[in-house]
Image 1 (cartoon, rainbow, N blue to C red):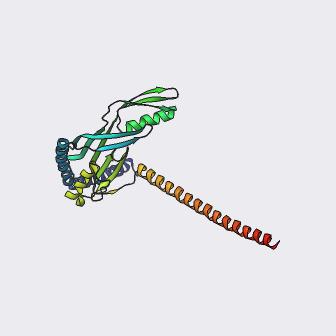
Image 2: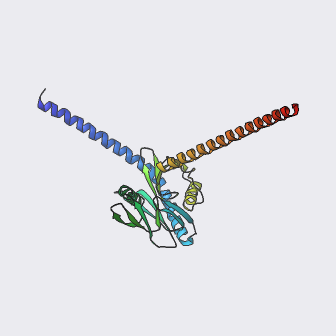
Length: 267
């Protein structure tokens, strides 16, 4: 076996790998092209929705619980917009719907966090969720100066592997993100109206549009709900056992009283 033969085999293997990758790329692009009309339907609907909702400017109150700080209450939605990212053919590959939730009282909220590690975690949390803030570190923690504003985003992108439109929702029902996949065949007027209802907080789900994926936040809430339910059942069992003991004790006391009366009467 010569060196040249070995190099030829390596060259052939590399060529086959490149051809496979190219074929996979063509297939992926074909699937994205199939999904793009659905993406354009969503874009068209959201574009019309933005024009109308910004004109009407309905009052949509909302509360947010901010980790490490507490609750931002009675906020209002405003500044709706929709934008796209395009590929080299100027075709949309992502639709980004965005709006802001602001506090009528724009006063900066100030709060402190104890501990260096907790301070860094809080900073990362605020960065990750697109808050506007400043911070001041100290040896044992630090302070945060938080703008009372929450940025909400809905991002739609074609997912070639799942053959669906991927929807990432950020900071809508809670601070954090959740991913869902939209079946193109399910995108009709009713489903798009469900989307508008979700934005205006008239509904909580997108059942007609998508299948969901449980996020860490959803899982945490489910586990918390199960924990509370278990505690409630345990308390009910404890109350039931105590009540049963009380009843048995009352019966025992009554029996003892009857015996004492019998003894007294005999004397």
